[in-house]
Image 1 (tube, rainbow, N blue to C red):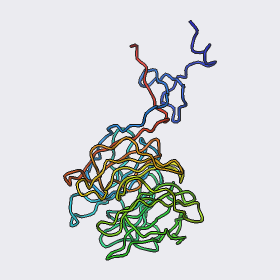
Image 2: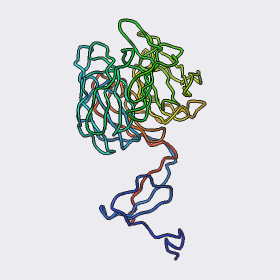
Image 3: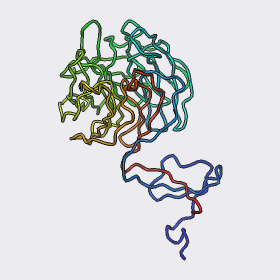
Image 4: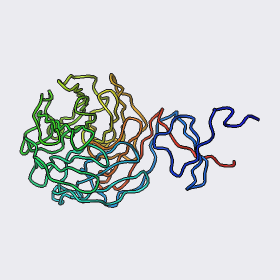
Amino acid sequence: MATYKEIKGTQIEVVATDPTYPVEGQIWFNTTSNVLKGSVLTTAAAWSTGGNLNTARRQMAGAGTSSSSALGFGGYLAPGASSAPSALCESYDGTSWTEVGDLNTARRGLMGSGSQTSALAYGGNAPPTSAKTNSWNGSSWTEVADLGTARQQGGSAGVSNTSALASGGFTPPSTYQTVVEQWNGTSWTEIQDISLGRYGVQGFGTVTSALICGGQAGGSNYYKKTESWNGASWTEVADIAFERSFGGSAGSDNTSGLIFGGYDDSPTDLRTVKVELWNGSSWTEQADLSPPSGFLAMAGAGTATSAIAFGGEGPSNEMRSATEEWLGAGAAQTRTFTAS
């Protein structure tokens, strides 16, 4: 029988920690756990159960790069508009959430973007509606320059605490914003507006390649509209299949992303389990969340193939601490080999 080296041309790697970015077919022996592992590609997309937040809440914001590297901050601690907003921040490692440094200003309905070690929190309701911006360096938050337009529940995009977009949102008592602002690490600059004023929108991407979709204006005006940003202008592209607002989202740019959960305009099921995948030209329905969840962490964390849904409000208005991890078709997945 041929050996692994004869087949692959190399020995099996011996490492103390698993590779950060394994490729399909890669095999290694982990000396810390004393097990043989390998990387395969998933064939079917699915959600799985992750670790619970330490503090259940809704209307949080999120940042992160994958289902195993995320940050969740702010939100409401209990149902009802009279509930006090939170400054709590938690970090996720793929297994459990750990409480880290609080936001400088407690608020809910805020926007967030970036990574687990370099994130930005902006806008929200303290109350009143806020223009505050907080920058995260991996260990603590620092208050930096305010948004030009105070708002809550807008769309967001960005990869670090030096690069972000804030799109749309709501400014009481009745303004549904079309304003878009870009953050350069020092200040916000207003750029081209989106075409439709709305809040509760899902957004993802970078400052040069972003997407926003869904949202609402008023109590029952839900939208399917999707707009794509190329760094210079917004273009209307294919609508999402289901009208919704206040769902979660994840995505790397305007050609690849995921939206999940939220509220739709159905008279019988206001919270939705629906998940849709964006490929740059159209939306495709994916495996559902469970259970129906609204007010999920805005912006969420991750990519179209590795993301998480966390927090929010469940079917009976309960605050949720649950986390669901998304593994998309074609994503790399580590498997442990056993004797059987």
